[in-house]
Image: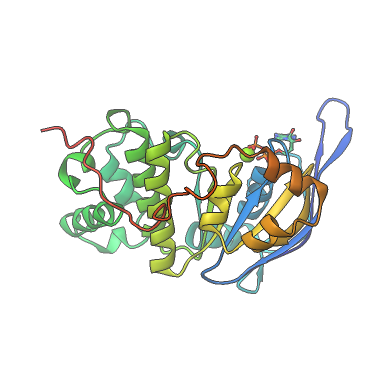
Length: 282
Ligand SMILES: Nc1ncnc2c1ncn2[C@@H]1O[C@H](COP(=O)(O)OP(=O)(O)OP(=O)(O)O)[C@@H](O)[C@H]1O
Ligand SMILES: [Mg+2]
């Protein structure tokens, strides 16, 4: 599905002309339906990796290597072809849902505008589809939410809306960049569960970026540990946990806060989606 080989990102300081290599030749593959976790401390290059895939690297940056999606080389694709692939096949879910939503548009309009087939639908059909998307992400009170503006909804609710928007376009790959960092812990778990469920239902591939090793291990088939722009190792969560191949991974494991005493981890953590009507109000 997604195959990245020897990815190098180089940025040039506009004032001094000095070049800095940010990603140092990373390779990984992502099969259909699989989830890969990108973990590593701040500044290790997780977001930059996603930006290279999306083609939104900083201006003046150079991307070398190859990024293949379903056999198409994204770095070789021309402007229009690349734009189409990005719009159809990739969906980004970022840390802050406010960034993805237009503050002056009601949520329903955002969802309808994102639908690839909206033009061939009547208004009523498009609205029905938007309501259905909201129900799919555990929002029962669709009428009210569709007519709300982003500022009228909580972060958790908005992130659900963004996920609904992301799956509406039937992408092949979800790129989730710390999608729950801005949320409180309970809402985090709910939003992650929804993301996971939608991914499985739609057979999507996903790159899940997070600082949180435990969360990544719960959601992903494989983890890639990044440091200073380099992928140090890739393995299943069990391999990374039980047989870390680098000191750095071991340190990262040791440094992670233990949310639950060992042996008391909540087994049901990701087992149910639940639906929330925290803001149903009336
Ligand atoms: N616009 C930019 N121009 C040049 N370098 C940048 C730019 N943005 C980030 N960098 C550098 O790229 C490196 C990787 O940054 P990146 O944002 O990918 O880290 P990250 O792993 O996503 O960190 P975080 O967990 O804090 O989000 C960092 O060294 C950072 O200083
Ligand atoms: Mg980042």
